[in-house]
Image (cartoon, rainbow, N blue to C red; front, side, top):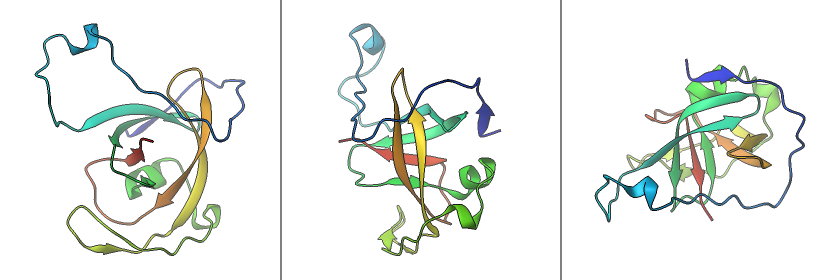
Length: 131
């Protein structure tokens, strides 16, 4: 299962807030530094804990793939138009299905993020950029 329903929380989404993701010295114990491994996390999106979300330093957009789109029970009418194509990892042109704004949470803070929904394969359920 890609997404697990979490307990409801009484938090409101904040706009224009940048999350900080950092690691302590203890987090780096038994790791090889420097490294270029992908950072793959579990991220709360809406009311679900979503696995296999890649954090991409170079990404200018948040992207949602078909498995997550279906797993969250989203429908085409939930999307707003978004027609700017972009290149996938394999260099192919991708035409987005649309865009959707959803709350995400990595700690106590909840922020709304605009995900571009695409219909192409990825080993990840979503990609989030990092400012």
